[in-house]
Length: 184
Image: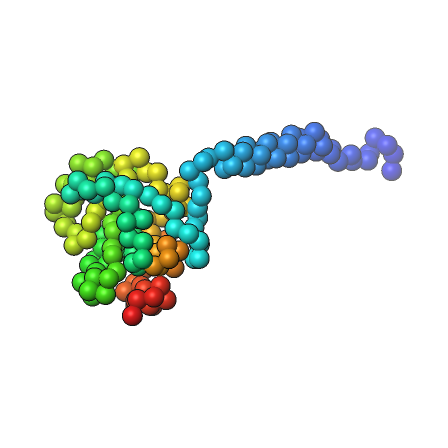
């Protein structure tokens, strides 16, 4: 076989792989810098963590702080009016609230990322038996590391996270989590 008959396979330039690798490293570095520079990002919270403090306005005009309930077990439901599964979660929570309020458990509903009037109109059509707080600037989502709605949080009497779940939490699971949080 002569030189003219041999087939030479072209090689991919190493330069292209160096560029792709460099871009990937730069993207990861930018993401890490953004994460570290974000002062509000403390989440996601995990069981046993101190629950991040917050104060929000309730639809009834009160300023409500999580710290107001220190020494009591608190269930917090993060939701939005446009979230269909959030409506189902509210239907699960309403009878639990009736069952547990006599045992000293507080429930709070926190609407995230929506204007107060949107939430007020929604609650007028679908009343909540427990306080509805509003977080129109959506500041609590990054604070708690919430990536899906609904999200249910249970805080024990010491202010520690006893339960944290993205998506729908069924009644039996919540009963067990409340028991683990110290509710008799």
